[in-house]
Image 1 (tube, one colour):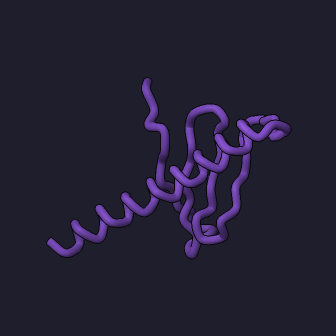
Image 2 (spheres, helix red, strand yellow):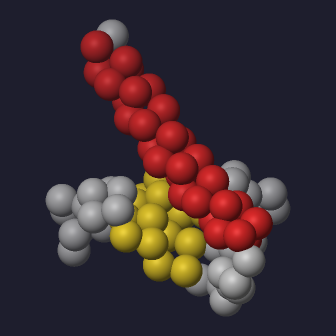
Image 3 (cartoon, helix red, strand yellow):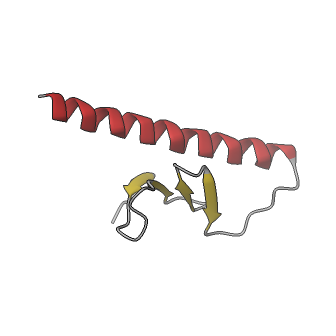
Length: 78
């Protein structure tokens, strides 16, 4: 099975929070509301390239979330 790179998630235990799950290495869960990241893989942040890549992935996760919310809002307007 091929998984999408990003998935939207919510949870009834945390109704005010919205999550983005990154399914590729390094896997993580981003709490969009709190802007907090939970890493599911061990990563080395010792070099600048790794830090830049991590920051880029997190930015892409936020962008994905914004795009998905836009789609839902457009559907609601129809």
